[in-house]
Length: 148
Image (spheres, rainbow, N blue to C red):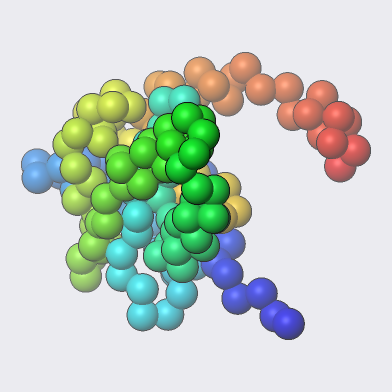
């Protein structure tokens, strides 16, 4: 069976936010969205960046959370963090996304952002934090450990 899930890749640096706080989602990332999809689900989970999912991938992850249950404290915390912080963001005709200021503030984004496609989602970073994290990565060591 063919896998029709979108694949996001590419690094797009220093994308400005306009006066209303909108940022343009670069065409290669928008074009990876399934046909007819004009929204992304934005949430804050790990570290100092936002994650943006297409609605189908988001649904798949919500189904996984639903299967977890609520009996364990760490399960409840994961559900709360992932679903409770999520917000659907519509893309306008120019491909701009109005991400809630609360989300931008959580990760320190003020007037520009770096977007990175990471296969199943898009990461949205403050450019300075992104560069700092990237400078600390030893790709060769990670690849060796994964036997890639």
